[in-house]
Length: 213
Image 1 (cartoon, rainbow, N blue to C red):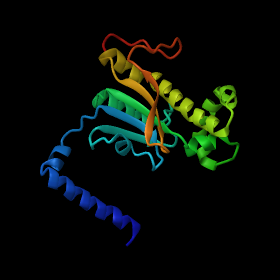
Image 2: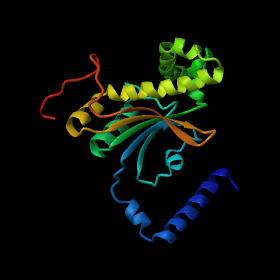
Image 3: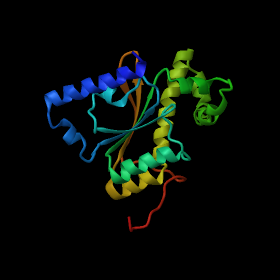
Image 4: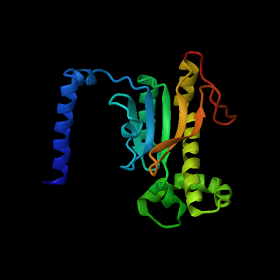
């Protein structure tokens, strides 16, 4: 059997199982989505948002890219963020990285990886910014793990710097921002950072908005 055929057969089995439990499952699923969460995760195939949180379809709005980045020029990410925050009105935005991240590991090296160098530069900037702290750690694993954590923290801060998030904070007093790291050796998520609405301030990146909001 060709590999992709197995996915199609699995889909049929999954659909049958859902209908056996609830004959209206897909009728309900096809209605408007109202997720509470936006998940910005790594594209790594070992970190599926719904599986590691035991969530159901419709619970989490998901965006994934290499090393769970929030880049201010990434129109894909920003479009997802705007839709999730302004239209779906999610209450929480989660940046979830994971230990043993290939993108972070690549950014720690001086190798030339071709086109992806442009993307890895964003992680390298986090690496350079925290170089001293990272290399004060005793082992390569500790250094690697710490950069994974610092990268997640930086991406959460990047979320807070967007006008999308700041306008929502002023208008709705949500979403809450979260930085998590998944440890695939143990299957558990570690909380790294939480930012409540309106607690974040920056003399450079805080925006003033018209009262029309």
